[in-house]
Image (cartoon, rainbow, N blue to C red; front, side, top):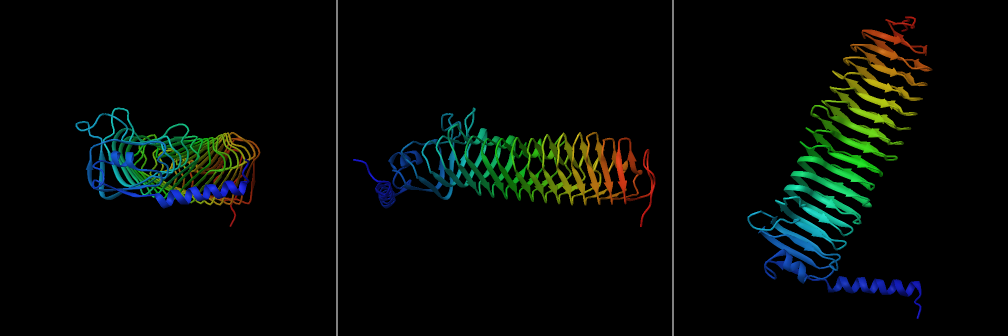
Length: 413
């Protein structure tokens, strides 16, 4: 007998209602002495409530336990201590739609993870993973959709890893002392919002998928504070990136066409503050860069990008550098007290600098070695040389005092 679509939907709805109605609560240790025994006794959709205490065990949530919820009441510690338990992943999730809330996972070691995920749609809330020797949270191939909210990862070799994992949402989480690849998400839809990172390597890395990275605080990092690679239309906005170690970069975009880098604050980054490579139509707008050991904003081998309304100042090497870039616009920026050039077009063609304030830089205010460049309505004053050109440039309605080779000095009120 063939059932109509409406009939199938009705049966599915009834099954869902029945499962919800039959869901039960299991208490640890009142009903079962360990978390794993409670999981073994649970059915789909059940809730396991765990009283405060330390539980020396590892747990597996197998298939067939879909919709299971584990809630800690008080401070619940799942401790995989070497003197108490065999070396295993602390938590393995195979079932789908599992929620784990208010749990501390500690001491996974020997190449084992804190939370290893094979099921879909895992939600972690107020989960702490600490002192682990491999990944704090790892989605294995085939698992999709992860949500982490108000979690903390500290003293881990690696942080969070996912590949081809659908949607990955990390919100209001804290990462401290993660040695490598703090968030490494590939071929997935990544959002990282309102998180804090302290003393981590490569805090946020998104490769090969859409990314929205907003309102994060990154302090004392190594590697790249935020890295987006081979992504389309990524958004990096309202992040604070501070105190990078030697060789670090603030925001690093490569092959990330259509990205927008907006309203970020980058202070004391040891390398380049904002680096865009091999990309087109990227918008770098309204960012503040202070004291970078490298360059402030760099467009390298990129085209049709815009750099507008940014402030770059105080000890940065070059303020804005276009390196082999084409048809890019640099407009309405304030570049002040850089150690070398304010705005430099090195090679490339068709780039424009319009209505920028370029003041008191140690090298040239505006410098061009490319072809077909345009300088218009800029104010360049107090630099070692205000304007310098060894390529081809159209100079119109600028205000400056000292002109280098191939620039006729002009002063306009």
